[in-house]
Image (tube, rainbow, N blue to C red):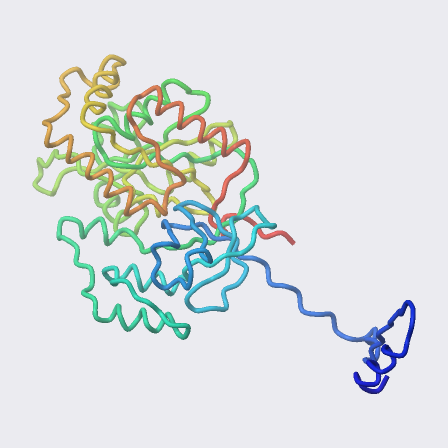
Length: 387
């Protein structure tokens, strides 16, 4: 048939069953034709913030958005749009892709106060947001919070990969440095499970303290230790307060080299190295060679803090003379814990409420056992790419 009209005339004149065969005039592909380009691999990202599509004024329709929470792993299939990417939950290939805010869009939003509700048109929604944000006042932080904020980072998405089931070589307990928090649990784990957990050796510039510690402390001259701290070789440190010579006193701290040595020794004997540190120090430990499992121990309410201290005293972990602190101090500890968890939550794998020694210990042991038996999501650079 030369034209559609000719086909229509033929059909009108035909009686009975008709079978049509459509043939293309396109010549077959040559065996030497280059194969089509491969589809790009989906990008796996761990979300470092919560997202509710119904509260996003720039989203064309809430039904198009993908709701997620901090810690969820997303499979991003399209990043061509500047404002919104297309993604689905990781491990659900049959689920349709939905919209999530791009890194650029969310960075702009996080850098300013939330804009008032915008009703975007069909064109250039991102430009409308930028115009609106430029008229907003930048966020100002109180001086007392500046030190913590400066050490934190504006993390929104993190490229991740699945680490196969394997022993956890380093367990990091982080959170506020209160008397009944991370340090207490670290000592309790090492006491209860000496064949599973071991702590790295600390370093001190006080020779007398090192001698009394019976080998648990390694001596380093003060000037040498100060130089190592300045070079970034220590995870964290503190002053001992014995300022007899007027030079600021001796120091005690944990070096990165000590952690490496302990992890290497522990790997050969089946031990998990466990240490505690302030959240700002966690970033120094998030290395591919260490692959730490990081747990944030959140401070409980005032009543639970008092009960936890009493429990620790009954087990001999805390001196009987230790006082729980005033009501105001305990409330401040809770607020500090909430602030630190919000600032540093992209750096830890999960958070555990430290409201009882036995219950918290059980949750920590379960987190380690799950990671060792089922694997876990880790930064993409920690896993060797498959060939």
